Image 1 (spheres, rainbow, N blue to C red):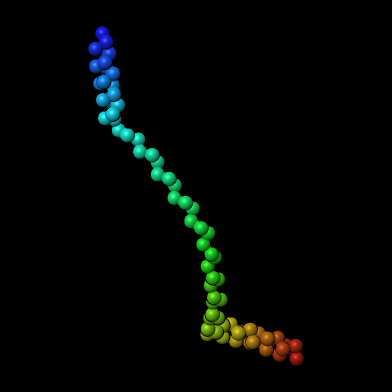
Image 2: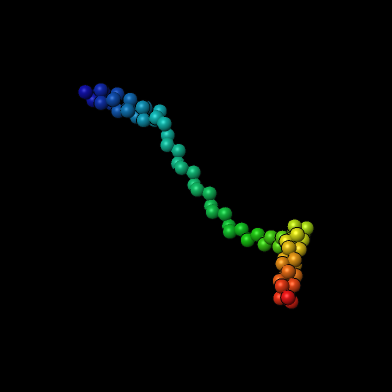
Length: 72
């Protein structure tokens, strides 16, 4: 009986040794240092006034018409 226990324990050790080894989880990467804030973007350049010209002309015409009405 001692021999059968010895054989059984040797088989158990052999099976355990051949089993898949658990690899330790890789350490999480350290958090990157806070990057400095990017420089603010330059202010956008003013759009050309080509689109504003008709609108300004209409406003001027309305003002002129109001002045003409006030003079009457």
